[in-house]
Figure (cartoon, rainbow, N blue to C red):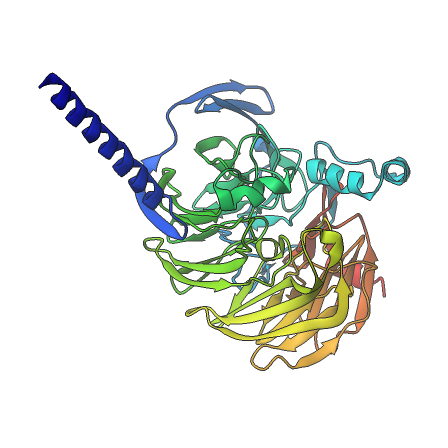
Length: 515
């Protein structure tokens, strides 16, 4: 009898284990969403040291140390610009122009900046190769543009620092050190709270490729990953949401909630006031540098492929609960392009620019060629309206960002191209209105910024100013190495960051003198 009871107990135990396994599988199944209401913050410890001209905050969030130095005397006397800065490029169509009374010129070197004399740097790159130069910039430079709110310019450096800078004179207001590197997240501001994603661009691509097997993710073993909130005036850390994968793409804020994604295909909705995560949606792709967008209650994200299946897609989820609105599958996308390109949204259209498969065969990348493809889709339904090849150039997918970031102004798409120039395209029918002269020797990738009939285009180590009506060059202002940073315009001043870890402000009038 005891043997029978024992056998029954063993059988029950086996059934329970199988049930738990099936439940776990269903809970983690692809393209699923879950609702949670928890905060990852378990402990917060702060040590404050007040000096004569600065205050140091040493803050531990879940035992992780953050150090912030605040210089209150460098705060602006007046506040200009918006009170909130809620997404990459400030607007859904990616046109960060802030109307204000400002004409300023300043240059601010940040911690880890390259020397202005680039002779030694160029020699090192020559000896060690282009890949070294790319990796070095991704560890110490600035990969995205600045943001501005309430008279403060915000910058996230790959060296692991977040800065607040006086928009009038370039003086540093705070410098917040994080335990790792930062990459593609433009600092956002909402009601006095700043937000930045943790997790830089230094990773093994195979970690992302393993997403398809559930065994890897971008950012594994590369440092602290997640979302950090800080006081937007002093820089003092407030709360932290930890994730296993890198939070590289810039999130988007709507109604006090920030929506953001990570390198393992997860989209999060987090309450900004308290750091509580409201829901999580998962897709079997990888969010790399494709900063999120928002349209009529739908959060829009881009994901790269994962091995063994190409899961490249533009995914829309409902902001209210994280349920999927649509999935625009892009199985022809090459390597990381769909998860790299920053899409733009205007008047119900989504526009994105990626590398698409042209010919060749796998598994070796050396056997594959690609061409630039522009996608135009309905932002409500996800239906593709049309796709078009941009230029006739084919290329090998390189080790760089494979996305091309559009801006949309009054129904015209301004699309950077693989040929190193800019195209103007009618959004409704895909008609090419003009093509600019070549602006860079290599690919042109960042969005232009539209101002007063002109397009300000980051182009290598220069800022090109084009006539928006015909694409002709008005001026060319040579400066430091600009990677893929979209510049912002505040009043009569261009403010931009560089791959050499500097921030600078230039009056528009001085740029236009370089004709």
